[in-house]
Length: 141
Image (cartoon, rainbow, N blue to C red; front, side):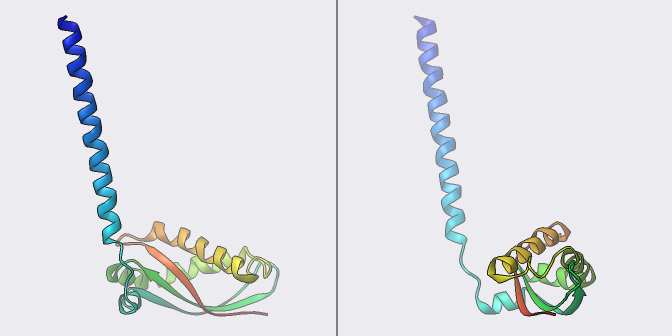
């Protein structure tokens, strides 16, 4: 009889704990969703860095000339990225040297290049992260 009461009590305690954990997770997830507002254009500009014109060879002996704007998640991250200008340009040139003009064709090619840059730049960042890369100008010859 004592074992049965103890087992039932233990089951009830585990269920209450499980419901509490699930409830806490749901509240935390809903709270995150409420804070996710889109930044204003002024906030985007404030946290973005212009990467001046870069001209470099592609892997297929053609060359590309492009200008980028890189958006970070906060002003401090933007300031850090501006200081890392030389590292950013190095990564861009290295990535482009492995690509061909075919790799950069169309919307999908440009999006893939932007995604690669985000993946390469974020490990450098200490005060935030890169959210978006915009190709502002682009010419292949």
